[in-house]
Structures are given as structure tokens and as C-alpha cells.
Image (cartoon, rainbow, N blue to C red; front, side, top):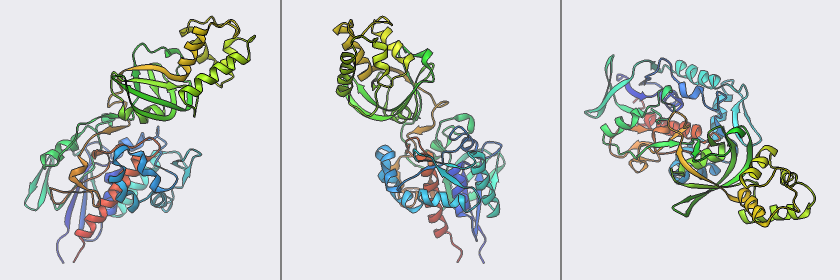
Length: 412
């Protein structure tokens, strides 16, 4: 019988833990190197501590939720689907529940319970987790790798980069994996915050923080040209715009862009203008405020729109000048916000950019240039929409890499 070979995994987040427990088996000694005192720090804050772990529905529908990179993820998602992920946890006593909008959470609504299952499974399968042992360097060593930490060096037959991105750096995601990848000849792309709030110039709604809108259209203009259109829920904050629709759109928004937001759901800008004109014309003796509130707009928001348009708070529809009517309709149909900046890595849920996908075999998650190297989870240049898509990608890429590693390093 040959000696066990070592599989080194850098990063103890959901991708690293899942890859480890899936890889562990006869003849394979799996070690996770985790820089923080305990693994899973970022997982614990996922979904505000409730862990929106995946999304309901058909796995094929997931592909459109990763921008241009859905095709790359197809093999991973088809190999380990959202149904497979739910079954993994329910089979270990943690029931899952799909919300009406499709988000899937543990029934306990506790990220800590998801982490506990992963850690228990790693322990059962003999995975070694070295916490508070940050990796200082990685290098090729013959046909394997040398992983150096302050505790010494470990030689591994296969190396998995599961370091996450650069968002929420306090949890340990500080972009280390990009440097490790480049040290091994693996190309990376420019990184930036994604799924992050948007801050705007001369923000007019700071005192309306907490007001939310469902399924609004957000159109992005750059240098006067339309460059994107998104739809989703919007939240006004003390300092800018947030909510799932804005977070998803933020991946393609840049400072200086102008966002035009349609404040009525499921309608076009022109349809909104017509609606506003019709409701004002229909109730001539009533106040403009009352007419606009009949469109299911929050009263505090309507009051602010009247103020911004120079309309007295008690003005009636019959006395409203055409110029003011036009200004109000425009405010509701396409309110403009000029972007000053996007939230930084401390606020971003995920990272845009990372290990370049053209350097990774999408059927195995293996490097095309460094034999034995695998990249999984958020270290890859993949960022999905909110709603559980990013965690599903982490688990699916981890499972695909584990299948390849276990197949190549099976005992003979």
C-alpha cells in the first residue's frame, strides 16, 4: 500500500470546506489552511446571518444570473445542482425552506448551523483544518506544490485555491488567492467590489431611509449612452441606493454613470408618464399629493417629489401648471441619479474579477497551465446575482474540483 498523498486547500470558507470533505477518502490526506482563528467567518454573515444558501427552481435558470459567465459554470452547476445542495444538508439533519421569492434558507435561519454541518462532516472524514495558519507562499515543487506557512512547509500533490475574493476583508477575504495564482503562472483579471451599494451626487432622499420599492427598472447611462438595464427591488438609505436590484446592477455600474430609475413597477418610462398624466387629469379637485399616492407611491416620497418639482404641498390637480406636471411625471418615470462612487470591499457582498476563466478547465476547475492546481468559489472571476447564486457557485465548483481530484488520486 502506498503512502497517502496530501491535498492542500487554502481557505476555509464554504468552497474550501465542501471541497475538502468531498475530496477526503482512502489514500488522501486533506489539509485546509485557514488564516483566521476559525473557518467560515464570511459564511456566518451570509444573508445577514441567515444564510441564503441557494435559489429554488430549475438549475438551468441559474445560468443567466452570472452575467457573461453562466456558460463557464454550466458543467459545475449541472454536476452539483441546487437540489443536490439541499439534499446534502437535509440528509444531515438541517432542513431547508424556499421563500416565496425563491431564496432558500435553512429552516433555522442560522448561518452557524450550515457551518456546523460542514465542520462536522470534515471532522468525520478526517480533514485537517489548520486555523490561524496563513499561507505565506506557494510554489511548484517537482510535480507537486510547496505550501509555506509560519509553521513550516507542506508538500502537496494537488493545491486548491479557495481563498474567496477581496470583499469583507475582516472575514479573511483579502485577495491573497490572486497573488498565489499569479505566483503559479495563473492569469488574473482586475478586481473590484460587486453587489455593493451605490452612492450618488447631491442625494435628495437621506431622510427617507428605509423606504423600499419592488421590481423597479434601473437604466444605466454612460457618456449619454444607455449601457444597461436592470430590474429589482430598491431601498433608499441614508447615503444612497441599495436593495437587491441595485446590488445586482452595481456589477456593471461605474462612477460617473447616470442611473434613471422608474419608480412604478413593471412599466416603461413612457407608460409611467401617461399614468401620471391620466391620474392628475382624472381628479382635478383633489390634491396632487393624493393623486400620486393613489399610484401606490409612499406619501413621504411623494412629498419630496413635490418639493423637488417646486409644487406646493397642498396644490390641487386642477391648478397644477403643465410644466410642473411634466416635471413630476419625469421624476417618477426616470429620476436621474449621478453615481459618485460604489461601496468598497468593506460593503461589497462579492468581488468582480479574479482568476481568469480562460485559464481554467470548466469541466474540472483545474488550471490549464499548472498541473494539479484548482481554483474554486469566489477566487474565480465569477460574481452572481443576490439570491443564493454565489453560494451555489461556491459549492458547485468545489464539488466539481473534488470529483476530479478524487478520481486522479484514487488508491491503486
